[in-house]
Image 1 (cartoon, rainbow, N blue to C red):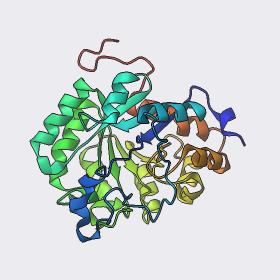
Image 2 (cartoon, rainbow, N blue to C red):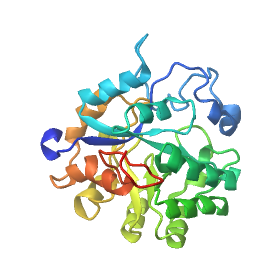
Image 3 (cartoon, rainbow, N blue to C red):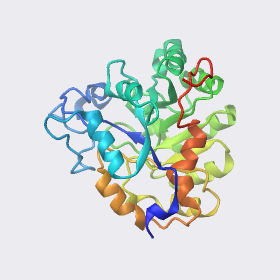
Length: 302
C-alpha cells in the first residue's frame, strides 16, 4: 500500500529539528546526565539507539537543507523548537510562516517566569504548543507535580497543547518522572488540557492506550520511533477506536532520516481511513494549524 494514495493536503511532521555541527547543542542536558554525560559534548545522548543520524552537508544552510528534504518527501508543514531566541527554529518560523510552526520548551522549575514566557511566545512567535521532557529537567519534575500546574493552566487559557515526553527516556537519566500513569491525575484535573505524548510511552504503551480511551484530550505522537518499530498496541488502537488520537512525528534530523522514515512507513498496517488522520488531519485539528498564518494576539490574518 503506497502512503501517497491515502492522503491529500500534505504531511505534517510534528517533530522536526535542524541538523547542527555545534559541539554545545546538547549542553542543556548535561546537568541531568551528570556522570553519564558523553565524553564528546557533540555526541547524541542516544547514539546507542540511533546509529546513523542525518548529517548536514558541508556549506549547506540547515533551514534550506530541511526545507529541501521536506519537499522531497511530501512534508508540507512541520513543528519545530522555537525556544531559543537566536535559534534556527524561530528563524524558520519567520522565514516560512506557512510551513513551520513553533513549540516552546517550558521548565516548571522556573515558576511564573515559565508561565509568562509561554504567554509572550504565543503572541511573539507565535507558538502553537508547549513542550517538556520531565526527566531531562534539573531537578527533575514528575508529570503530575504541582510545579507543572501553573503551566498546564496557562496552556488551557491560551488553548495551547503541551507535548510531554513519556516512558523510559533514551538518555541515561532516571525514568520515574515520565511514568505514563502520572498522566491520569493531570487529565482528571485539567479536562480541557490538550496533552500529546512523545517518545513512545514504553514500557507502558498499553496503559497509554487505556488512558487515551479514558481521556478525550490525550493524544500520542510517534516521535523518535522508526515506523517499523511503532508499538503494535498503538497501531491496533489507531485502527479500531483511536484513529483521531495518533499523530505523525518523525525524529528528523536528530536520529532518523526521511529516507528511512518514508521507506518504512508504507509497511505500517494502518487501515485506509487512518492514514489521512495520522499524517495531517489530527495535527491540523489538535494544534489549530492553517495555511494562512494569523496574528495570535488579534486573530486577524497577516
